[in-house]
Image 1 (spheres, rainbow, N blue to C red):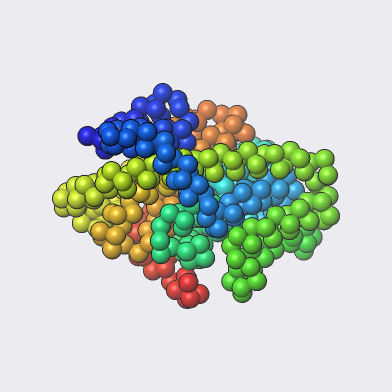
Image 2 (image 1 turned 90 degrees about the horizontal axis):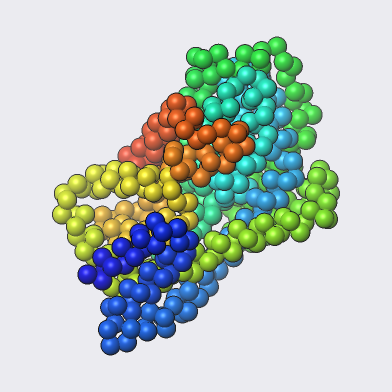
Length: 432
């Protein structure tokens, strides 16, 4: 009865338009109070301690730093220089600009960990360029929205950081390493239909005959940006700094590029950059804090055990259960961001992971890939919304194009599902 009350409260509050953080905290407090009839104020008394415990974790220090990195690189002009370099590498022909957009999004994914921020940075450069080359605006928005979904897979990833602090046995370095190959696989899976659709429909014919940018000059211009993922990930690998310290190094490096190298960021620009990053980080941390109350109520009220028993009684087995989760998480990814999904459902999914003896690192990557699909699946896809806003098209106009990209990303996810070594061999090789 109390478990039903918790779920109903959360759903009703969400449907009523209450912010997800408030819905999580308020629903948890009311459920705890209802379960303790002798002391109904227990839910309020338990709230502060659980809120503090949810955010007083060292790995979470990296979260606001990586958010700040995304804001800095978005304004530093790195994306534009990477696009020019990618064009110098792949040339100019129908289908190359979509491939360039996806490749640039993957590289930027190695700098920040936010899909919407990636969509804004890449879309701000690529959608206009693709429009001039003859690509439909809806198709361009589909490409950018899907490409940005690789951001939460390719390290550093905010979603992986949140997952690691909620799931024992899944360290941040291990998750970062495990997400690398699936992230590249997902990017390649997106490039194939993007190029094929472009050539089948004759998109980008205006690219033919355009001069290819000089390779060495464009490489020199993009070198500082290309070095960022190497510095962040390589520094963690050789032991120069922890993932949390790497986030601070990335901020300092980004400011150096923007202020001293490219001179695209002035001292007056720092205040809006820091303000934007602070607002985004505050929202995420508030959701984390109030989700702690929800997780406490789930554990205290014993909701997870009956759920695990019910799923096992379905007789689907390990693979069948994973496919069921695939469908559920994809639908949830359409309406919620990855961090919120982790915070709401990890208290329920963790016992399920233990029951089926799934590897926590592999399960984290697989879960993230499922959520990434939802981020560019209409009608409520956060990455696609950002891209559509830049392209000035309605989200329903992207359906004929984004559907093929969804199918390709699903195929990449199924490879990771059926062949766990795709995700696990690199962290095992690196000794994580």
